[in-house]
Length: 250
Image (cartoon, rainbow, N blue to C red):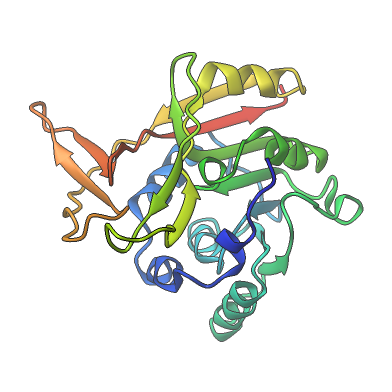
């Protein structure tokens, strides 16, 4: 299935990216906590990492503040996001981070192959029609490891979910279409292994703050507390099964 570029090229949700520059999302912080616990940013002075589908680069900015000895490049298909993000980084006088135009489905392999110790992808795979094409493109760049945060299930079930949001009950067409796919962890583990990334780890994202339920009935994540005081994340009619995964060449 071909990706619908309107979901990525139109500036339909500036606030989502803008908020993260000053207040990183808990998923971003916890993802970096987990990657750091795996030792991925130890003794990597001057190492270069790629943030795929970076938006305006807020995650790049957060990683730079956390791991200032590393270099980061963010790629995104939205030219406006790239320009705004580069303006922000320039204003902060940050020279070890850069944002560039890049199409995940048509990467500049010659330019970027063998350039990165690791590739990161924050909250992207589940919003694509499928993950195989995107992961294959990342692997073509030959990083040592790839780390992803997305919606996963730890059993042998893939869920292909397409969201259609409507402004009112009389609408004939939806105002927003998007994917919220949930992928099988055992299957993506095997997918990586077949391509040489045989060391595989994963971890559920357990949110530690309360998110209020929105007053509207559209998609927006909120939390509910369970009897053991853990929290589940819900958006619209869906349970948000967030996981972090890591695949590496041994």
